[in-house]
Amino acid sequence: MLNRYLHFIAEEHLIAERQQVLLAVSGGRDSVAMVRLTALAGIPFAMAHCNFHLRPGDCDADESFVRRLAAECGVPCHVAQFDTVSYAHSHGLSVEAAAREQRYAFFEEVRQREGYDVIATAHHRDDAVETFFINLLRGTGISGLHGIHPKNGNIVRPMLCFSRHDIDDFVQSEHLPFVEDATNAQPLYLRNRIRLQLVPLLRQLQPAFDNVMEGNIARLAEVECFYNAAVDNMRRQLLLPVGDGYRVDIAALRTFQPVATAVFELLRPLGFSSTVAAEVAEALDAQSGKQFFSPRYRLVKDRECLIICPRQPQDERTFVIDRDALDAPLPDGLHIRIEDYHPGTIRLARNEAWFDYDMLRFPLTLRRWQNGDRIVPFGMKGSRLVSDVLSDLKLSRVQKDGLWVLCDSEGILLWIVGIRASAYAPISSSTQKVFKLVFETVLS
Image 1: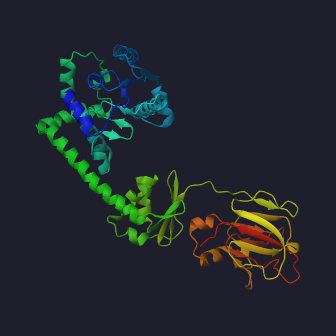
Image 2: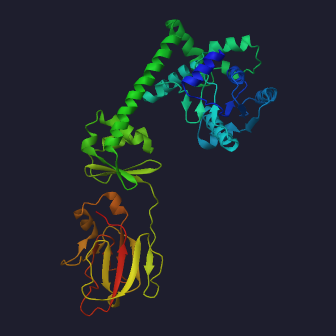
Image 3: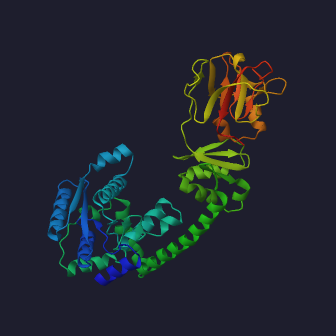
């Protein structure tokens, strides 16, 4: 048993030499066996235990047992107390999910605080099979069918090379004391029902069930590797970086079939749910402007592209620029300068606007553009809707939403910032001072 334990750790690169390991110990036979094997292997370790207060009296007894076990081993023991039922209710989780969330958050907090290298849990081969069926019954992609990985970030599972039967034999041969969670024998949770009802039935139907499932899970893990490589290649081709976001060409996206799966895998790392991804796939033929959101990103259907950018709170402030307070706060990237006019110094550029300072009607107002705004563009006759000006430039919905406009005290629009200046207060031969605005961002 010890040789298999050491071989598996080395083969899967779970624990390096001289690393400090934090063992997650419930007090049950699996974690007790892990404690004994880790001690026999000479691996430095400490213990962590969670008291979820789900079984009155029993949970406290489990905690006391783990504390005694740590004392016998001469290692530190870190214990957390949780009101798991209240946590589950307040976070909209099942008790099982709440306990899992609390458990791993505590382990990681201890690991970082105390400087342990990895956290070891006592999941074994039968747990991997149970996880397979849990994911299968709840609905999953291929990533949910590989069971449990030996390593996931700072979490390692050195007991995955053993079956429950292997661990039972080891605990018995070593005369190891342990605590028994009575709820493990009750079909209270889905995992228990799979362990107590489904798996025994499958073993009757297929005597070689354990070996078959081990092979199935191994092959699915290999298939997942090929699948993930293909998905990574697709993401490299389609997710074209633009600033701090991405652009996706819809025509290129359609070459990956089925397109709904391609959209899901493309958006999954950006936090878009499967439901939202399905809606995006259905909207590929929709008109421009349709929006979708993940917790971190905003996706906009823009003509033949998908524009993805980080979600940021829209700055809806209004900035006032008075004649005698030109140092007033302005949006990032916008600067004001007052200069003496020298003929021949005017530059025509989108990101700059030049006005006759003495003709301007102060205070000026800088605000977000609105539907119905009109401008008399410099060099043109008559007014135009700002929305039409922006449409002519084929700006995306994301670019449009971030635009500012500058107005005078009468509400006359002077400048679509970074886009087009108006014909009001133009520079002329009689101009003495120039009111100059420079916007650092040039929109294309």
